[in-house]
Image (cartoon, rainbow, N blue to C red; front, side, top):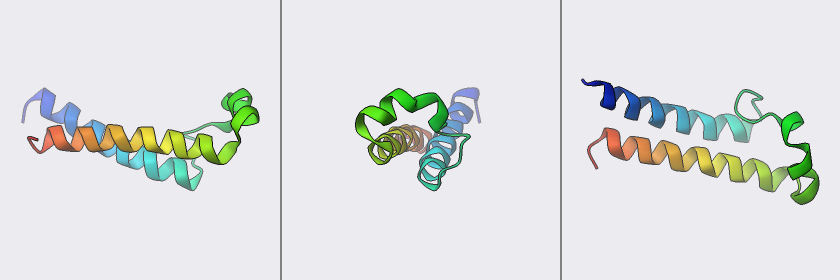
Length: 69
């Protein structure tokens, strides 16, 4: 396993874990205190779903690259 494969697997695991962690409210992945302006403008739920979606996209792309797709 070369370094690029390790990076792809790390991206896949981190992205999928970030998606789940954001939706569960884990502060490690999305800190609401640092996003107060955006949350005030559009609301907490859309921001949380947007961040979770971004993590999901990174996870899926990492998984596709790790599996050779």
